[in-house]
Amino acid sequence: MFGIDDPGIWTAYLLSAACLIFAAWYGITRRNEEDEENDGNDSNNPDKTSES
Image (tube, rainbow, N blue to C red; front, top):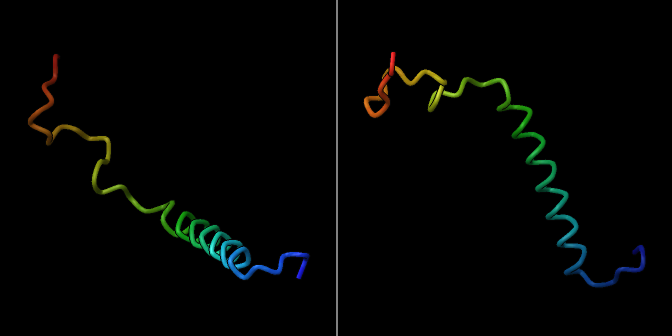
């Protein structure tokens, strides 16, 4: 098919397409979630000192 007879090549193409679809799905579903690990507020971090 398409001049590529080796099944290993087709496997690589299918896996790369599957990874592309998974990455797009993951990015779309996770893009609007809050970042609970680091929300930009370092007031609870004892290692940071404010120089005010």
